[in-house]
Length: 552
Ligand code: ATP
Ligand code: MG
Image (cartoon, rainbow, N blue to C red):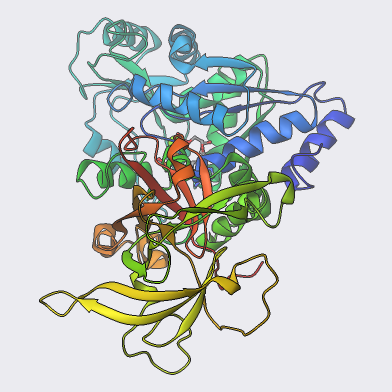
């Protein structure tokens, strides 16, 4: 089956195969292991794996681990898990750090060709000398060092003779290029730091702009797909591949990043949310991370369908987060059992129902998918309903319970509110109702009609459960994601993004396992939390409510 419908990247691949430029498509997904993957990365994964697969090609998972200061094995492991969970298998697992020796040799080659030099300017001075969009840069006073001196200094950089920031290796290109990326970019820096893969073997590390094209070329990647902000770096990418005399010539192709409303997607910001305690970890269900979305209850199918719908193009507007919700509803609708849960309980005593009697009522597991069969739910004299489903002094057009009114209990009987019991503070703590045995659901009773149907859980067998309801983590996304960020995005964190309620679920829910998903009547889709659920307490995360105003 085709993963990717026609798009401009696919067209390039088709042409390259037809012209014989390539016999096989090779792509890679190249995360830096400095954070958890988010929904934006899912787009990149789906494009890279999906396109290669459409041509029976190959995709590598390559960790772009060239910065020891921010990277960690925890991130490597989570990234592998997330890619697999999304439904993709990599052909090869690579680490850019495994190529450090080769990259070093290529840098030496550049020096020998007079195309790289060791510079003693400080980072600030290099920035000053670089010029601006309207002014050309200035040559560094160290630009004309001899090949011998550069080779010697670079070797001594590797040997650890200099401190962090004392020297860098720069490509010698053109300080007056209109493309600032070509104004002698730094290609190696000194960092005395332990690397998660190479330990203390290296104290010089290649910069992204130098390392990335080499990594692609070493692996024989044919199409190096990246996001649009790298467009201006393409000439440098091509320069590195050519001047380093790489055998294979990958082509860099840029597409527009995925942005989603009401969230942030930069790893720096996500990290800040975690470290400053706005959320409870990278996998907090409010996070746009793959692990957070998985814990909230999103399915790989829903994420893939959403990403596919967003398409592949150069533009990058923000996609409405409700579209994501639409796809998870669609995916779960026929798949998951329906059930009743009370998230904010109010006790109801049915005074004319025989004391001590329990009857088992029949209910469909999923009326839209009859193959899922039936379930039994107990009913007795005491039940819980939602506090919200009762009002002592209701407005007009309120069809749920109020004194003297009759409603239908889903799958059960009509009940009528006869009496309201309050505590010393005047709070309603219990309702006393009567039921009509003639009105049992499924018996075809047509005697009279009621306007409201409410859900309930039998009280003596009910299983206590915690419900976690979520609202968007970030308010006013457009401003937050704008380039010139005037206020800190933390000012837009929604203080009400999580609401925790203690309630009850049907007794058959006792067997639920982490990550099991359900549709709770009227409340929406929920996932059994994999972290906080214990044998004594079920925790349900709301994935999404049942309805939205959003139309596709
Ligand atoms: P961030 O800005 O979140 O730190 P990054 O680009 O630095 O992201 P990487 O680990 O380098 O993170 O990303 C791996 C791949 O995923 C890259 O090819 C990158 O272009 C792509 N990617 C990252 N964010 C998005 C996004 N929002 N939409 C599409 N692709 C993305
Ligand atoms: Mg990056």
